[in-house]
Length: 153
Image (tube, rainbow, N blue to C red; front, side, top):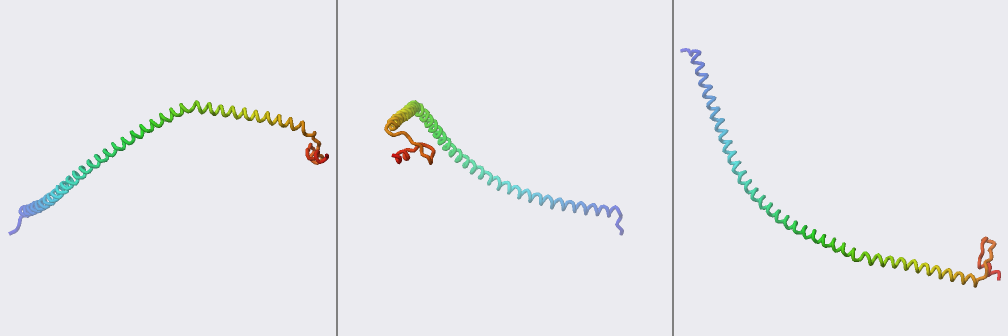
């Protein structure tokens, strides 16, 4: 009873087909398990993503409300700044001419006062020069001295 080459080849082909079938069954089973886990993970991600998206919408709504408040404050600050600027401009216009005139008057009065004092000093010096005796030169200093003149008397 010998096994012919054809029968041996048929047996090898049958074993290879069975091995391939077993390998394919195991691979399909693993692939099926992986797909089931992937489906579960996708469901979890979908649930968490929807919750995160809902929370994000709430945060955006809160931020939008806060931005509306900030816009209102900025608008009011802009109006206040404009009002202050306008008031400052009008005050400057109202005060500018009287202040300039007052300063001009003060400056002119100051110059007039200095000129008057200068003329008074000149008159006083002239009157004092008439009363005082003439200057005598001091030998040590080389110039006239009233002390030396008074000491000589």
